[in-house]
Image (tube, rainbow, N blue to C red; front, side, top):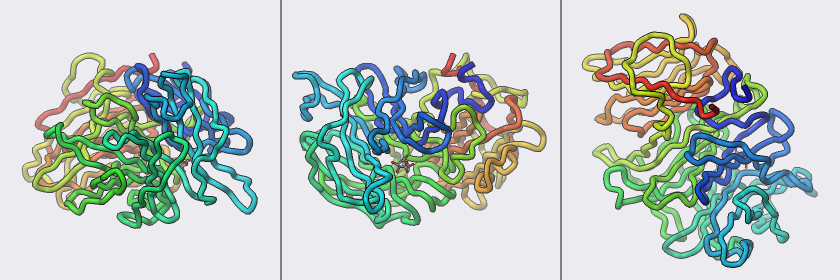
Length: 469
Ligand code: FRU
């Protein structure tokens, strides 16, 4: 019953109660995936920002734990990351052991002459259960009002820590290095490129393996943009490029710049630190948008995470593409069935492929009743994948209804992989090179799925098990 309200996500993490935004400190350690998250322990709107905490053994079934790092002494705990300090480089761990170190932005709302954001450190020697703030915080202070969201990883080649952190108003990502997580030296800056229509937040620099040849990899830098994303409000762009330990250089290849998600509801995604070397990186984001996040009609919680997605890159005649594969298979309840328009209840998963022949527009509609539905489709005339939620029922806010679109790439096919939960639709198309997440608040739990425009050449449906049972 704790997780059984209308609209309560059944395959996505949401806190038992109260407000969440960005995921923070994603890390795998000692058999557990940790999800920390921007959290208001006292209410269902933004405020008193602290790090909430949940753990999972499989990236899907989460157990919520007490608040990990609370707001303290007028310092809010903003977005950041957690690393495993294997060799006790920080000196925070017990002798000869490894421990977890968090690097986050401390936000002082009442600072003489304005507000202040600087980078802070905390550590945990008990598998993330309790945290101690470093007594010499902050560790990087540029005396600025906007300077946030450090993302730290271990640079294998150069044996040191690297941080990407944002100067939101300058549209700039700074890179720092450190050998002990306390003293940081500026390496370089990257910015004023791609889309600069809003604040740059939540940078994440990571190595992405090739989908075709796992021995090859490239670097990608992901940056949040708010507001001003093409879909409206907050969104995230990525750059493929090269990182030599010091400088990130964007590639000019076709497809080297794109959006990690073309829906309205995926923001401040970061990848998990310390996952096995032969595994693809896993990205997870906040499934909402600053335009209306505070108005979502859910209670007693507000905010949820996206599904985790495994990342790789594809390279074909059309150029580069960021491929995302949602982690969901283990939730399948029984074998796939064929797609009929019989009523079904979320959560479920669909895989549908079309051979359009002469059709220009085709796809599927998810109906909650005759007048209310979400339409997902391919529009060949405009070369777009689209998702239309204007008729999906609860309007939420003026900015909520609308159609999100993504450019289609010729030759990458007409396949759709869709995960429907009680208040969201996540779509992956063209072999995962397009991702589109949108929140949807249907009129009732039962929906019917119908295809339109062109008959699918294959269509499979899986019922999904709830992660809360
Ligand atoms: C992005 C963001 C971050 C900040 C956090 C505060 O959604 O604005 O830049 O650290 O949320 O909650």
